[in-house]
Amino acid sequence: MMDIHQILKQLPHRYPILLVDRVLEIEKGKRIKALKNVSINEPYFTGHFPHRPVMPGVLMLEAMAQAAALLAFDSLGTVPDEKTLFYFAGIDGARFKRPVEPGDQLIMEVSLSRMKAGIFKFAAQARVDGVLACEAELMCTVRTLP
Image 1 (spheres, rainbow, N blue to C red):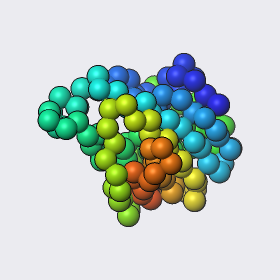
Image 2: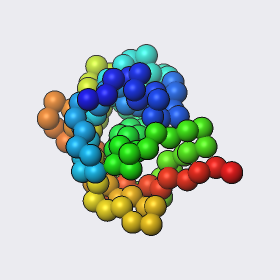
Image 3: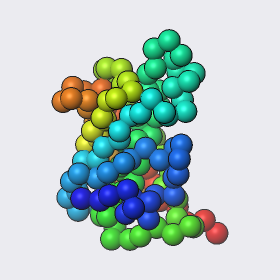
Image 4: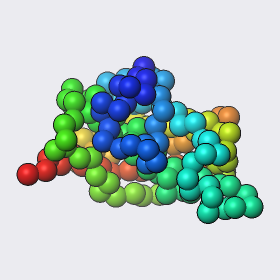
C-alpha cells in the first residue's frame, strides 16, 4: 500500500496531472492496483464536456502509465530523483469501454509483462465499479537526464 505522500516521493507529476491518489496493492515485479478519485473539480471537465463531463481517454492512459511507473520503480528497487524520468515508448490496443465521470473511482490494475534493456511492457486495465472502462498495452522507459 502507498498513500499520496509516498506517491509524491516517487512520481514527478503534480496537480493537475498527478492521476494516482493511492496504491491499494503492489506485488514487486508483478502487478499494482491503484486508484484515482475522479472529481468534478478536475480542470479538464470545464471543456470536456461542459454539458456532460467525461474524463478524456488520454488521461485514463496517463493514469495507468503513472501506476506502471510506480510498479517499475518498486520492481527496480529504486527511488527516482529529479534527473529520472519515466517516458511512454508506446501504446498498443487501447480501447475505451465506458465513460468515466465525476464521482467515479477509477481502479487501475497494471501487470508487468516484460522488462528488457530498459524497456518495460505492461498490460493495463482501468475499471469503475468493476466494469472495464479502459485497457491497453503500455511500453515505457526510464531515462536519466544529463
